Length: 290
Image (tube, rainbow, N blue to C red; front, side):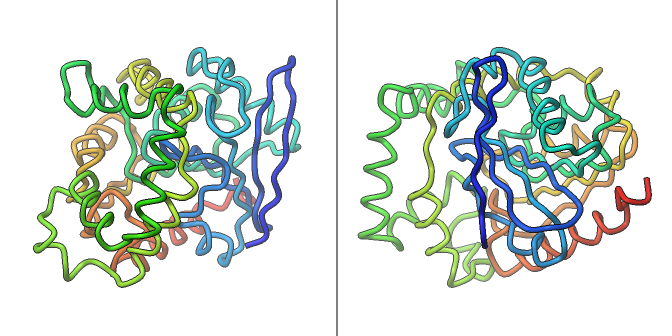
């Protein structure tokens, strides 16, 4: 894929973003530990005639952490980026920890959003200070040490890809590895290796842990565009209860539960189903006809 990386300055604060493909615009709020170099699911969108625009969210990549002081401020800057790109309306896609940003933007800027798609998305209180995962994240992905953490993970993953895949598997799936074997594709090990080579947390993941708490049921209820909620029944990173929560409170929402092996719904033997379903949804609500 031919990816163009740009940098937009607003009041001396930088927003880094990438653009791939041509066609109706999809504005992507990437997941945690990611940035504008994200790849999961992009190929199928581009091949189906969409342009994929991905800003690195606050604290990730080349985007200033000050952009993310609050969800409200971050979304104001996203709206300014759309103005800069001369885009009145977009399809909005929120992935994993980027779900909070997508939900808030759709609620606060309804005139800019044609459709909302949530994939494995965080939409309510996620990790708390009582959770061991929260404590581990604060330690391993703190801005002072996250570079070393990812360097160690990627180095080990490059040398022992199959071993690291199995070690990381429980963080992505509620299934035991033996139960999921029939759902795993041979290419998944390589996809995880590539993912770990591009992952960085910066200040972004610490911001994510706080910003999700700004979401309320009132915000969810304010979303008035067609919304497609995609989530694996076996997600071990963001439990499926988040998807049920979204579907209960977002008025025009459709819930799509997938039988993929876990959080990364773009991998596994059911990945083609994920691609087909989102493309069908987006084509059904073309922003050119709105």
